[in-house]
Image 1 (spheres, rainbow, N blue to C red):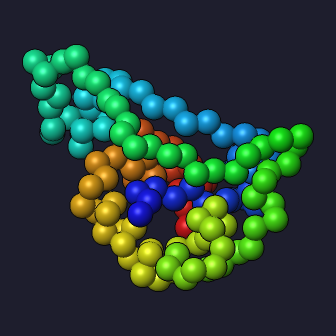
Image 2: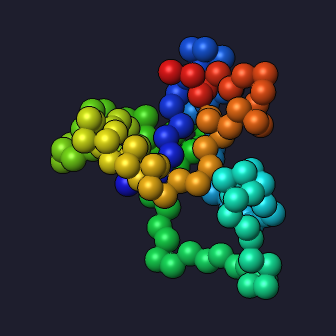
Length: 129
């Protein structure tokens, strides 16, 4: 179950990484204010140093070679629960969309698409429906 979705909005000028290889990157940083509900949830620095690790992680992805993706030949399906297609070409159905919204409501602490303090001039175009 995804916790975020990055929709392809190239049609309104939002860059989308569909013509290049992607990388997985993670980091830990001091987000005392913007990622902690405006600072209401304080970081307990007595617990430092903070570390992160991955266990049984498997990146199931398309290979990028000679300017083409190995996913180009895969079929598309609109259901996350049907047996056809692969996750790379699927979209969320109504049930999947509801589960995503539940996970975001219950587990997502920060969403830049709702951060008017960070973007007082207006939210980025990818955040608009």
